[in-house]
Length: 466
Ligand code: ARG
Image 1 (tube, helix red, strand yellow):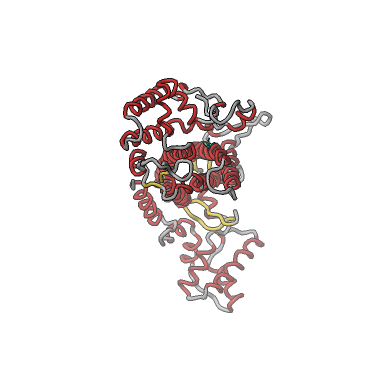
Image 2 (tube, rainbow, N blue to C red):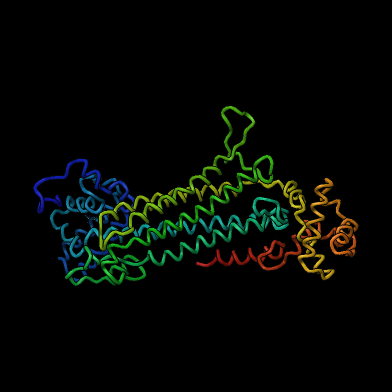
């Protein structure tokens, strides 16, 4: 079968054929291309557009190809793409009647139908994998609702929290990543088949029927838009880029927390490397690579956006170059997802160290100021100033949180307001206790075990949704 035989008297140069072929990255479309041809041929038979007998032969050959698999195709670049390689296979099987298969269809609508079908599966798979990761995080969180942890702002000690609270931040970010995919799915799930080259066809094709057969939610309303739009692809890459950002942040925290200075977690040996010269080293290479590789999807997004910018309607061959970048963003992000899932699941938390850090470096200072407001009706700004001074005095005197008592507080209060506060030892001690700090934050979204459990329940409801 030679597509050029009518119009041209010869072949492309070899390098032009290779340059213009999409066959290598079309491999991914193999199953979708069979489905697409099957649905189109079935509809052509039902609409009595092609002879039933020829149609049946085409369908049988498509079934055989599905059985035999991708290796049955001759993926010679001279075929341009998988659509022509597939047609070549059918032609070799049943002869010239194979030619009926392309009635009222173009590779222009076929390729974007295939991409959409493939992306639906890919996105569904990723949603399931993200949900499995969230499930793992939720079960870790349940076991750590009272594991003290230090929360940072500006990577400086901020306030005590729990490991569960921090983990549930990951879970909520991942949930939004999931929901973003679910939303994009709606725009992928629309059928362009029947747009043909760009203006549909004079044959009485039934687009509703192919939409049903292919399992799309509806048919696209405009055939020019049908063949020329790739916004769904760019949007999908964005979703993968965003997911890889979430994963890269988790990886980054594993790198920081596992350093000697932080000492908060230990990465499992299975996700660690050593040094070729420094025998003592345990390096978080896998986490670093997860962080580094998360940028690949950003590059693919920019590439695709630049590719689809300012190309005129409708189909332009530039669009062929979109697909490999979509696949690469997907594969890379899926790899990162699997690795970060495994790495986090096998992480060990050094609970003694995290408890020590949670109470250190005046991380409970906000609560001391809050107690002054609650118990003594002090405006928060005044309390803030008193506690700020307490901390700066303590630092210059070289004393820590545990040395601050009621007298210390009153001495500074007198300096600033002229009056003692008289909070009493108990209130001062309680305010500076990291565990009590955590337990008092029962507000929705807070770090108290009860609040974290509530967020866990919300997440479990999400995980159960279909
Ligand atoms: N291989 C092309 C692509 O991936 C589809 C075929 C359209 N080719 C053409 N010359 N009209 O976009």
